[in-house]
Image 1 (tube, rainbow, N blue to C red):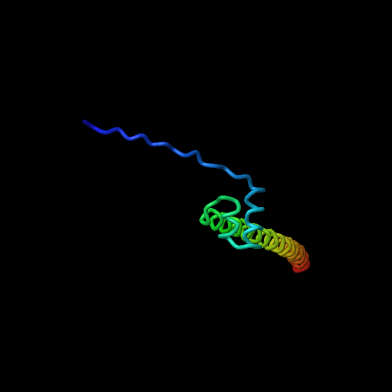
Image 2 (image 1 turned 90 degrees about the horizontal axis):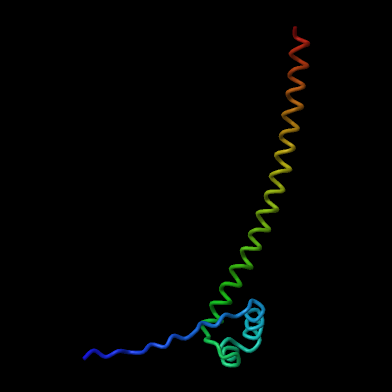
Length: 99
């Protein structure tokens, strides 16, 4: 006779971003193990949240650097377009004076 096993699935708990942020602040003050024990979390959860928060932070910094670089390149492009327009006018002027 085959034995049937009952599997009870645990519902995954979902934590808000605010809770995660506060948990990470607590972990930075008292340590990850102590914070995990106080909040009844696994230490691996706190480490994962920390890594994700750092990635988002670095992504925001990278985005800011890209925006700054884009603005610089746009200014440079406008300057070069202005130089080209001046050179076209000068070449037309000198072409007329030769004929």
